[in-house]
Amino acid sequence: MSIIDDFGSPQESAISALRSPWLKMLRQHRAIAVIRTDSMDLSLQLAKVAIEAGMGLVEITWNSGQPQETIAHLRHQ
Image 1 (cartoon, rainbow, N blue to C red):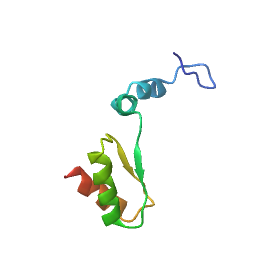
Image 2: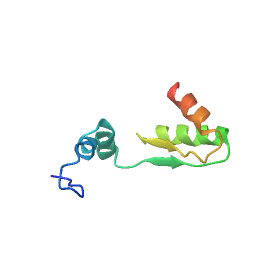
Image 3: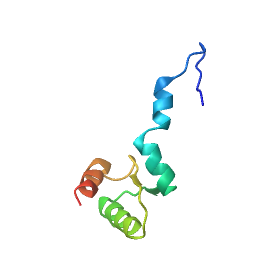
Image 4: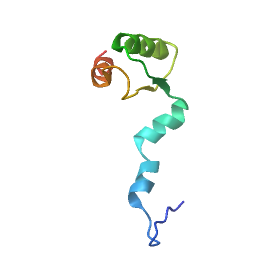
């Protein structure tokens, strides 16, 4: 597989991205639980339920209430 830019040269960053650990996880889990709410408490509750239900990947959107704090809290659980 080769990704070619306008000048005809391979895009090494694009090729290495195809091999990244993130994409390997995405291929393994095949789905992402996307959480978008105004409430940090509700985001935490929804993430907990998604994880308990077997979701291996959870996304907290940046337009949710307190996304950085929510993500930090989930990382430390």
